[in-house]
Length: 196
Image (cartoon, rainbow, N blue to C red):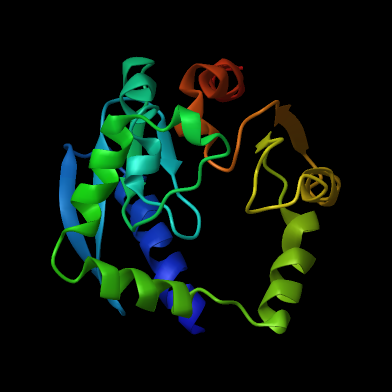
């Protein structure tokens, strides 16, 4: 298994496994080949697993997580570090304090840097992943901020075209983390997708 898989896919698989059977609420650090990862899985109902991207964390889902539980889902998140806003004016003091709390944890900066280095895929890995896109048959909802400064806007339509059952929704004026910037907008698209 490549380093990227060990750091990212193993936690993702642990989360999926945690959701495979009804279980009590969980908030714990789970061991992985590269250390441990924080996992929180709470609520009752169909499973929703929220996986963040490079440099983000479970904090990125904090505005959606309780609302999805209230809507009748069991929600699972895992933790790393980072932040990606499209409009810095949407960053609240509460957002800043949540991330500062993470950064101040002993060893967190070193862990963040190591994580970023492990997550750099090779061109071969990227080709293998993108080559598998046509085999993904499940419905996919792509919510793409038009002011995303991490991933180019043009990548959204290309990704939607590569996935056989995808629907792209561009979120006007939002950045890379619309779930933090405008959770109501995200939920307005996400809930109908989850509850057809």
